[in-house]
Image (cartoon, rainbow, N blue to C red; front, side, top):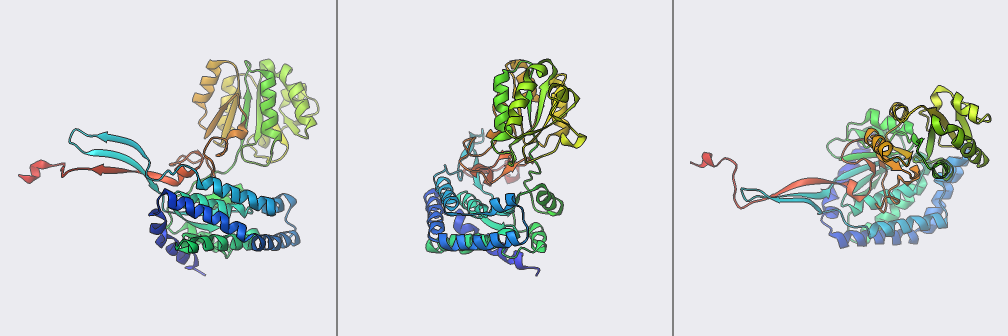
Length: 421
């Protein structure tokens, strides 16, 4: 049914001024009220989630996806706690990043303002419904949410609670709009609303993000894959490098900042690989190695060409021995996804060369790739990680949900006084 999403978007955009006009305290109160409303609706939300889980199991959806879909009392409490953390984050709206008095007396400022109407397109995780809405509203925006069909009952229940919070504060419920009908044609309609939507943010698997990017006419923040590398330099502390490899791969293999490829300088391969790969294998990691890696660790499976550049999202690690720092950089440029790259090295010159050459959204020096996360980087919360070089690059916190504009204060100055003669 064409027009369904346009109507939702028009109402959400019309609700924009009511949200943008709230001051810092008003938006804090709004997010706290949303958190309270979620807790009050716990029974309804968990019942809806049980319905989604039952449908997912009947459809043969895998255990990993069902786990992402699942809500229980503790998970919902964590969502509520997350909203309370968002409520107290520093307000980006109105922040002035530059102020200058020009020779002609004009006062020039760059000031942060809300983006406007943000569309979130996501899969599986119903917690995103609450968290994305809270982040967008906290930064003074309205939001149009389109969750996956597998979580439709959960999303409707969560959105209903958020609407109750808005109504309790005499704010328009349309500020949080949910595309409840999961039909794909509604996504296509959404992606064409150039007159209404200021930014679309897809969150999910590579196929979803490519579909959005391929069909969008509105601006899109993209993050296709997290093919993250650790390069162990010849000047690395080998024990430190081993810790980074274990944390990057083992702590949570299914996330986008998990380590997928290990590159090791040839000069230290015989000292590093046997110990490090034995430790990884003991923790359940499958090693897929180049010929030099297999020579150092015979239990490794021979790597295929497409293993390098693959986002496994599983306890699988591709390993390659490289002859030099330059070869490691060239490998990352060819196979990386601009997400996160790390170097383990005690050589300042090697570190400086790596940092200068790698253009990914985060570069880690003697630190795990797992730190590329909004909370870990001090943003408090994130709406996603951008690997698109637009106004935001890397984890997107509240600042990334605003834009800077110029504010010029004068006292009657004109640029062409000769026209007044």
